[in-house]
Image (cartoon, rainbow, N blue to C red; front, side):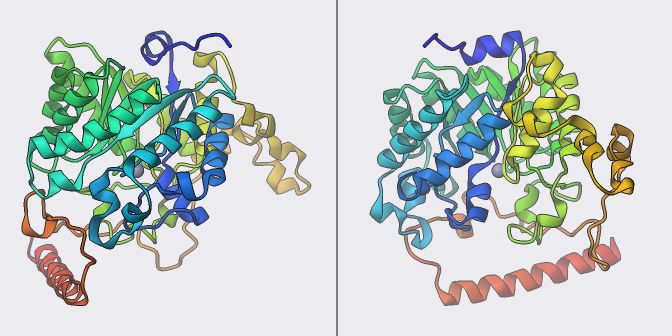
Length: 408
Ligand code: ZN
């Protein structure tokens, strides 16, 4: 088969559509455990992983990200997770690459190997130990000939710089994407400074993934882009946000919302939100436009349809979708046929269906960061005593918020 164009050429020439977040999608389908969020499904239920790759490919994704999120050895054995007893990081990452490559070759998609922040960093064990975790992962990606690397889901720019340094040694294009918003990283480094430091570290494409909704993410990305351009640097930009609305989040993003992770459904973005997101991202100059937790294939299709003209093609899944409600012209009910137009869906303000539903929540904001005692990770299961003291702390924290909101 003809050689595929590489990532950087695609970004230079047009738009790359990413895929969605695998842990959230596969957790809902019953193949991932919420909590550890590790990807042993690539060995235990490979058909489920292949199926999800295929959905995203059909919806227009140009990238199959190997499902390796949180597959470092330290995470597979963290806090009572038994996955590390059954599988090694190397075996998981290899299987993930094989599955992604299999589906990528059914179309014109590229394969990306991903690595993310480590418990080793959160525990404050230092650069050498953290980079050793990354090196083991990158080695598997290189051996399995992925097309490029994504260092994503980093809350601290320092750890991200260590990851970029390891990734660049592979000689592959490196995408770097932090899970931060307009307020910057958890150590207090501004979003602009994070962007500049990722670019200076040598990443080819920089941006933001996860933790915030598409529109908060683009606000953060705008700050990064302006800071990078002010330094006279030139890089590509990536956005892979949540598919949940999070206008009420603080620095820690959706992890801090009381609804995380089992009550987020009322916040899900519609396909029409994704049209707006894809357009605004494109107008901002972002050329790698994808999604993270909460994204399903129809969200990706909406982005690919919004940018169909720029891309010169429509996704295969558009065989079963006419943009802006066009398919409703074939509906039996006349009041539904009346909704077959763009104006209707662009102006819809969807209800939650919950009579007492609030529009926003109060984020937890414990402000516990890397190096703190409570952030030290280990292989032991969380004990009943630890859980009891955490619950007391949660109650105290809630009381503190109430006082703050009354007095301040
Ligand atoms: Zn995510």
